[in-house]
Image (cartoon, rainbow, N blue to C red; front, side):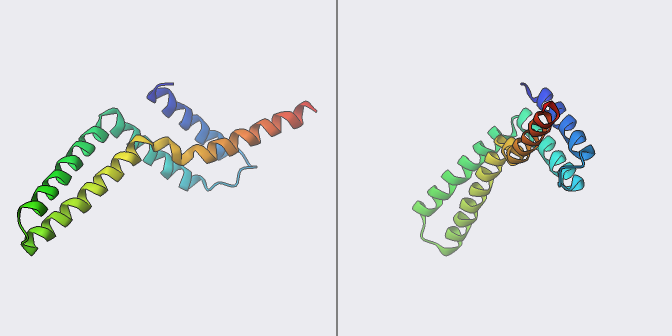
Length: 123
């Protein structure tokens, strides 16, 4: 399933969850999460996770060079800022790359409830 099919699938699933009375999910929160998911998928499609990991690697190597070159406190503070920035960029890279994992539990619960409903209708 490519990204466009996955986005259409999530839109369809969001509509089903909204109209299903058995589900106890706040639709507004789910729509906000879906918009966040769509934004992360767009960032992934445009290869932003590669850019962020590249810049994080550069920032981490600059911090390493600054720490090894001078014991000055200002440069140590600067290198700590670079280390924290690179950790944040790596975190953002992971969030972009694995955007679908946040909704995996809700999707499994919803599919389980749909299957249980189908089994009850058959019997």
